[in-house]
Image (cartoon, one colour):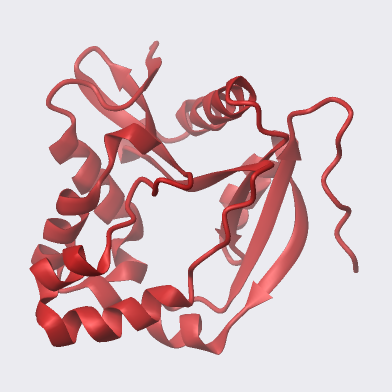
Length: 204
């Protein structure tokens, strides 16, 4: 069965993208963005199709990969967005939690900001195709590296990225993320897309 990769989302694909994103990440994000109805409302409010590449079969959305830029990300949002959904107090403490996840935007690195594939399409090459499309998009935009974060316990995702040429360059540990999001260790992985440039080698 074939599928296509395109920039943005297919027509009428926003609701599907919101549901896919929350289905993939809601288990972790619900500690901060929950309960589910509010989490879905927030994702729907802030989801930016200009920071997405999507996989579709016909009019059906089957996968999305987001990326970060100086202009934002796939699901980024502002303090105003948090206040609109959670109120002033709810926005305050949620903003503090997400501050721990903030990453600097490096001019040479194209930063992946989440990848989701519809459950019935997993194992059919959709995830790999989306990652490859992100690398092509990054090269088109003149970046040297593609960078992504993967929770250390997600061995299946890490194996996919390693097969596609990504290497672990460093590890982040945080008690705060363990308490608020349910994971403590995050691996930073990079892939060079400039022939003469290699990402730094991970230290033991």
